[in-house]
Image 1 (cartoon, rainbow, N blue to C red):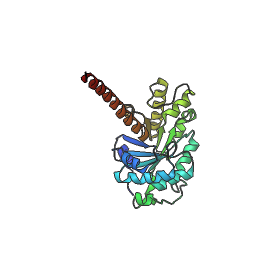
Image 2: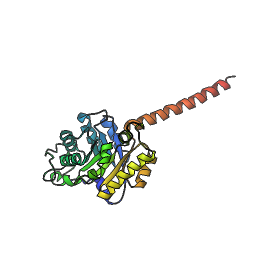
Image 3: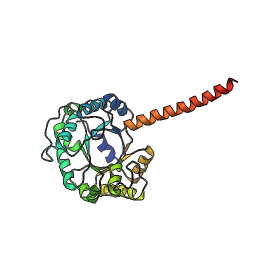
Image 4: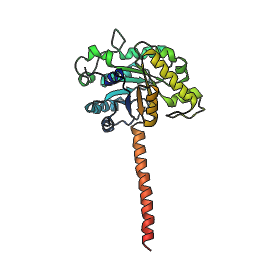
Amino acid sequence: MIPNKLKRSWSAGKPTINGWCSIGNSFTAEIMAAQGYDSLTVDVQHGALDYASALPMLQAMRASGVVPLARVPWLEPGIIMKVLDAGAYGVICPMVNHAAQAAEFVSYLRYPPLGQRSFGPTRVSFAAGAGYASEANGEMLAFAMIETAQGMENLQAIAATPGLDGLYVGPADLTLGLTQGRLAPGFDREEPEMIAALHAILAACKANGIRAALHCGTPDYAARAVAWGFDMVTVSGDSRLLAGAAGESVARFRELAGAGAVASEKGAY
């Protein structure tokens, strides 16, 4: 089968950048996939999409060679196995709070004897190439999200889960959980207590030989995270990037049009 390029990059000591798709549209996914990301995640949890949208989005990504990933809505075997069968090369699972959940999650990504994944790779058997049945266990990525106070309490045990490939930090929920709402949710945390939490997660990953991933709002913060030692960083996402670029374009027009109108009025007298 086609190998997972993320695993090869990390083995070579190269960090990777992940894109994020929350708009349920195959054309948007195709555009995002063509921008040079190493991987691209379809967000089935909070994105404005469901499985019927996720499948064509995964199809649209294939031509670019980007590694397709999916965030599932919850720790539930049906949707985890379904996004894998649709072509995802890895799954990000939210709200993993203790080691038993992490082990359960891993089991849904692996075929027996390593897990309990049901065999029926409807699309991925074509998209991933020959040999999927025998090679998939070694290529699929299992990322457990650390985003709650309970998850932090059980951090070491979660990170030590056999078969888990990495921890993915959701800083917005993690901030809510650790500060009990004292701090507003958001990316790119600067508070000392939140930076300490990020470094604790990173250290747990390194101690257990798994990958550390962080969701970021800006490339500047993502670069800092890589310097700290994170293996994968997500920078913003399709909806935020669209809104940001559109907003900047409109603001610039207003600025120039306003200046032009003043100049025209002055020239008329």
